[in-house]
Image (spheres, rainbow, N blue to C red):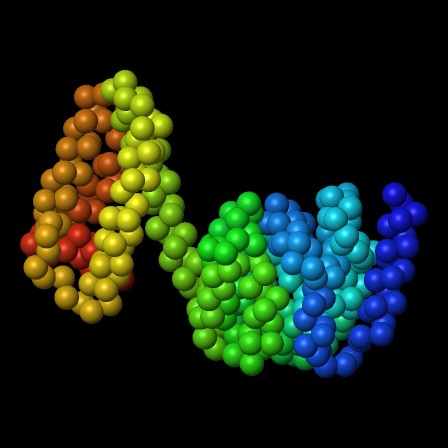
Length: 316
């Protein structure tokens, strides 16, 4: 295996040297480099291989590349060589700080000249803007993406990846990126937009996970099936999705009047969750936190408005 890896590395170096400094063509879009081979990075590389792309990979721990090498990927000996191998360089590591550590090592940054850097690590909108500015100094094109999927869903027709950046760069690379996510969504030229929406979705998901766990505590305390609770939530998915869409429109319009259920009604229901937790001997932390927010909003005079009027007390 080590001999095979050395052979592949020499091929990578040859490809890197032949392409350095020239502008990418549509033919180059059949090649891609993936840096970072955690669960998500490996899933990205595997999806590109399944789609027939020539894929070069690099990871600090080279052993993680072996399953991909067996599928046809080329393992580069360094991040610099990996970047030099392809016109499109996809980075998927733990965060933007880890990306900087990789790209600022040695002469790695210089290898980005004339290439497209696609950042699919997790970060903030400001980090996206800072990385775009840095990429421009390196004379590299830049796209910032956010993955709204689990690794097992990468490559699926309904999988969503949000991408922001220059439209011309997005169009040039969209076919390749669509092999990662059938629901590839362009968010516009403002490079921080993908991270913005990812952060907003993550905020929603965090509350959802916390709420689900407290709901499981309720079920366990009362002898009900947690699996049935999960199935009930799944059956409510279309209704909950429609409510999310409606409340987003309410907040954007600023029209909180004429609700089907008022913030006061919901707040009183949440206060009963505190009572139930005390009676069942389970943690009151989650419902007490939620009840306090609702009580503040009601006391501020928003009780007759939509549930989303909670946002009024969360603003600075």
